[in-house]
Image 1 (tube, rainbow, N blue to C red):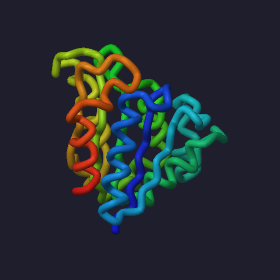
Image 2 (image 1 turned 180 degrees about the vertical axis):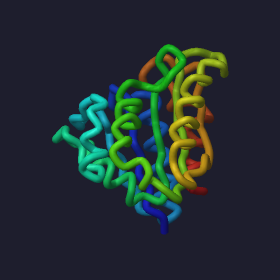
Image 3 (image 1 turned 120 degrees about the horizontal axis):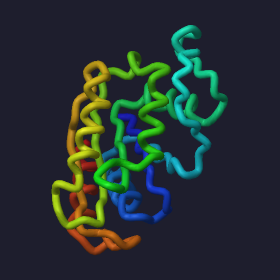
Image 4 (image 1 turned 135 degrees about the vertical axis):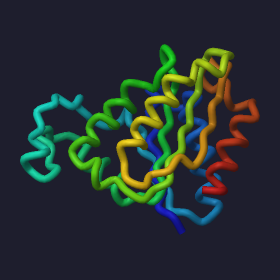
Length: 178
């Protein structure tokens, strides 16, 4: 049994990337894994200010918000799933903020599998290029965290539109095989 952490960064509950995250969760739970999904919109996470207090305090951030709890869960997870809508060819600000705040303990994020779930209104695969680059850049900064799979749902601009596509099954299968 793996510990799986799903970070859903959609600003709208039931948005396309959020629905795909739910499908991943369902598949992973049915496969017997312990899964926790965090809906980032419900959390208070400030932007990294670059103060580097975390360097002086062995990873303790100067900001007192929900990120310390999320970062601890990232460290404890075997599998990390990053879910995001694609805005202007890149991931959501909510997800990028979490990634930036990992600076406090990023050297401790090790030995994991990572998945990307993304949904875009554009009906062109290149719309995901910036998101994929940012995802892979994050993983490159971590120790032995390998890319394990992606669901890239294109052509789904309206809330819930992904529900009637093959992307839902892809996300479920990714979770089942995590």
